[in-house]
Length: 291
Image (cartoon, rainbow, N blue to C red; front, side):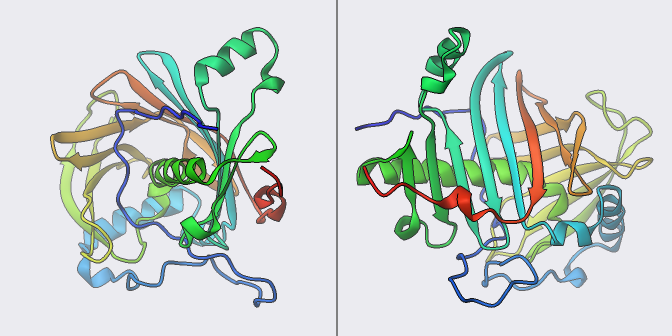
């Protein structure tokens, strides 16, 4: 069985390191905080600009507070991609931050699903599901199509797609809550006036970079001076800048998350739907025992 998964979108994978770790085994003591990757050192405020720190802390408070984010154990959401007003990608994520697990769901061919939807037969379309430990991926990954495990070859292909989508989608969704992550360096660029229908009244521009052991990506976050909410996020790319306007906010677990990112260069958008925050759900990571 060979599964075709088409995810050749214009968005590049995010290379920044993300909080997660290997899942805790049975009998381990109860966690009191999210498991984190052990390599990066803790956030060092001395390496960041004081004006940038003040702006980021005000943003954190406006989004629900750092303490609320630190207590997020599991977050679920759906990422929907649109290009030229056409629906081109649908990915469901469950990120168990507490134990470093990820569950990924998609359909092999979106066009097939859409045809089944029009015919009222979506229940007949099997979803691809991958469940794995974020830092022991190849050994722990179990992918299914419908209610059966896939072949080892397809398992590795699905795992690569799942992990890549998690890197991209989880960072665009949660970047605004990860500005004091280990290895992050914040710089103050200056002020920007209204652009792309955003930053009315002016924005503070904050540069987000990383210590070498964490990554080489560079972002710029434009924060409205009046509301303290981020309105534009940009990522430096080899050929230019990938920029998104944040169009609306969704609330879950006492926190605000971007509801829609609108590409400032091309007709593309990402919508984040059904965002839920709760306790880790082991049942979502159980797999069938047969192929």
